[in-house]
Image (tube, rainbow, N blue to C red):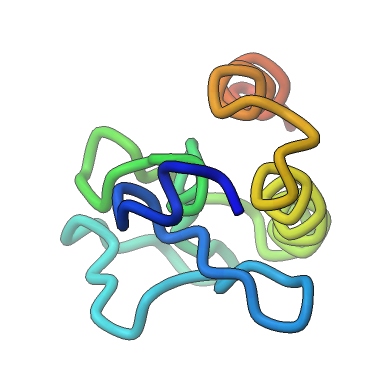
Length: 100
């Protein structure tokens, strides 16, 4: 398991090979989105992203399904030490911001 996960510094708690998508106490940084959009962490919680307004974006619901699936895959890879935390963060910072 990734050292950040083991130390509790990231919410990357693998269960049956899959990371926990979010802790039950996540508040989404107080951000509210219009109908048809969902709150999304720009940098996933499992990748050290914070639950603060600066890390929250409103995302089209359909796009959110695609990103959530990719987050699960990348977070699982992080937990298995197949990728670094920096690599995961860079991917979501550069690949997902500004996507239509």
